[in-house]
Figure 1 (cartoon, helix red, strand yellow):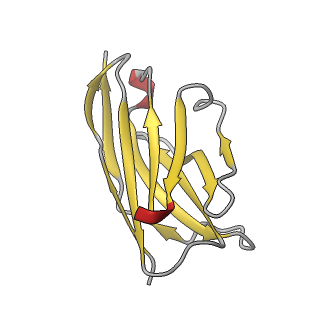
Figure 2: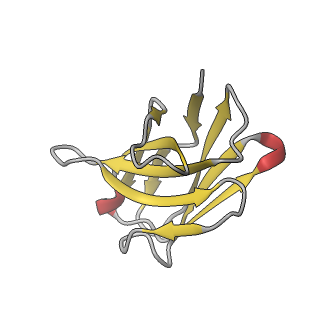
Figure 3: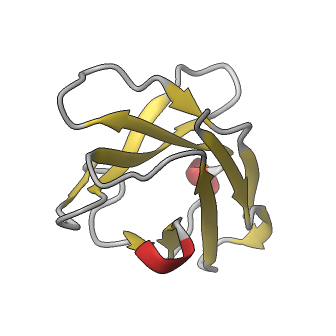
Length: 119
């Protein structure tokens, strides 16, 4: 059973930075894509970034380009989201997700970690 556990959220001032972690377990992930999503109060969950576990190919939402960096540590089975120059609009619950390369649906999710950016 795939398990994803996020950590690293918290309260930060505008302009600050955070690094979120997602510890993955339950199987090998060579044929998986790992992603970060976020959901702000009153809004739908939105895609932030993704990375292919094996090749390390990344893709970002426009809102994340230039400020967020997704990476993975294969030895630790952990995916990271480094966020800099945070804005109050980045306040949300951030979720780690996983899906197989050949499947369109993100079918494994973590419990989320709260990120709050104060102005």
